[in-house]
Length: 365
Image (cartoon, rainbow, N blue to C red):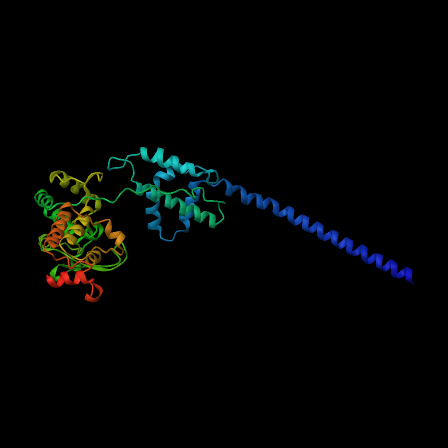
């Protein structure tokens, strides 16, 4: 009986060993079947180029008009990096592109792309690479850690009053209205160019919708009387725009205004501040904020009119002129000489806190 139980136990052991062997074979077969698939997935990921990566990214963007606009602005970096494998790129590759390739190019303004343009290209390249890392298309962002170039100081150009008078003589009614509205209201170029007659209310009030504002905040501005007169002199078209192209019933393009602005600056002999290059239309916004604050308007009111949210924003537009510093000195000198600075610190204390000798001096007069 014991021999039969032993033989039964041995048979059970052999069956378990055979079952485990079959399971191991199936597991090995499964591993061998997965191995080629993993290799095929890794290979294209390691060889993906920047051009292919951007194509994949654009397919995920829902706003196609924005995607096209962003891609048009990335023509230069994509031309340089299009065929380069992302995994093989290094931070020094971007430095070389920025310092040796991009700075040798010439824009329509006659110089290399601005620091802001090059920094914007870097930001967009990082965004796409970070997206690719999150989607596991690449293992790392090759430009992670590349710092943007330090920006140049804010512009300091303002348009003097005599310069505005020369502008009025040098341009036609449409350009004069376009320029004086910007200088006298602080509106941005896009806000002025897309201005509608329906936005202008009695008293020169102009309502700017958040859909047109850069900061996405609605605001109300005021046109000066000369700006209202310049606008009223313009013909009214069928499209409802103040600066309307009669052929399209749409606002004139930026190029149309830009070409005429450059010739007006030459005819009016406008000069930019040192280091600012040419006079820009946006300098009219600087002029408005500077003149408004100089004339006594509180800075908070000027910020509201300009659509700025923080003091750091408005500080880039407010330029204190030399004559303002001279007037400050004159007011301080007059106050000091006239004794309007108030009593000295010791004399402002209560009598019980002043020394006996000091109190006697005050009483004796």
